[in-house]
Length: 242
Image 1 (cartoon, rainbow, N blue to C red):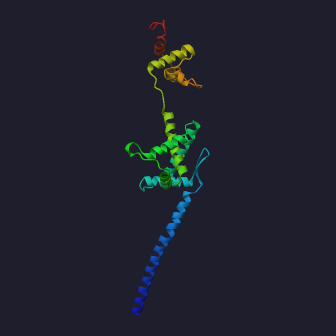
Image 2 (image 1 turned 30 degrees about the horizontal axis):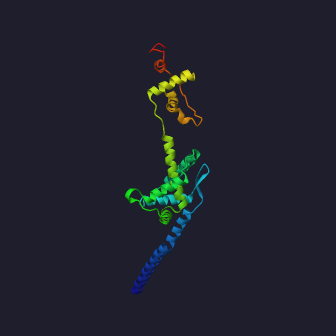
Image 3 (image 1 turned 180 degrees about the vertical axis):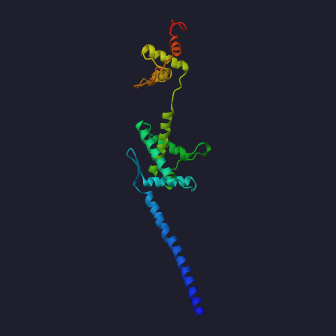
């Protein structure tokens, strides 16, 4: 009887061991392809994840962008929310650049792509269209989305340059603007309120082709500043006007 139970226990252990092997093989052979297939389906999904002024961001675009981020981050996972926020910001930039006429042209995109792939200085090499397309498809999924990405990057730089551009005016130029506004337009403006006019007076011919709006804000003009602005008029001596 003892031998029977011993053989029975050995048989049970063998069956359990065989069952465990079959489970592992099943996970390797069946689970991984299903997971990869599910991931592939998401990559090509056209379901809308977000929309910005009618510009749709698909689930597939989010997944592909996340894969690109993870690839460049050497395997570190980027949160999906971070990826989606970046895509939404990119859409806003694209829409605003288009509204202002700052969208990069096809030529600008082509020149930038050639510059990236040809290299610079001693590292320059001939541009190979076939190699370019292979690299883009391997790293970005398709050529159209990559070239749109390049266009968005160039448009973003042009938009940033547009928004951060400015003109510096000196104290004397603001005093001159105060005087011009007072005597020519009969408008009293404080120094900061006349800053836009001062910038315009630096080079009026630069704005000759369009309609210009100059904001004049604030009339808190002290007697001292007013005196300094108008005393430069020919025929007036220092301090006699006020």
